[in-house]
Image (cartoon, rainbow, N blue to C red):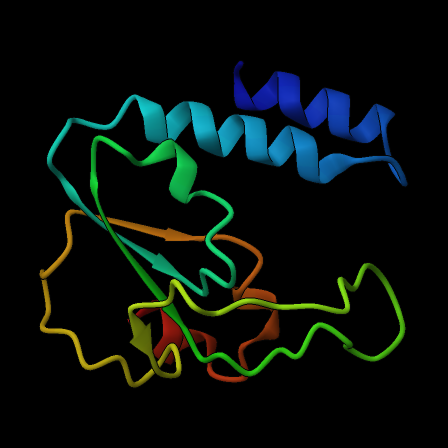
Length: 121
């Protein structure tokens, strides 16, 4: 599925389940990655995209600060499992050398980060 098709479907589905469309698109891109590449899932949370990376060397990072409750606005699970997070740190202070990973996956994270430049760096 092309990004323009996902965009059209998302616009037509505002207020619906846009997460399913995003997951489908991200999963399709991850499945196409060359086997054996090392991927860092930044802000991985519960690792929702790990299932698409069996052919990759998957490493999950998160600050482990979300409790599942949130602020009462939007979707909240009430339960959050960080047991599969490999690196517990903030996005701007990961104890990882430069160029350690071949791929960086970062979804639904940057809008929550106070230092966007530092996070991208």
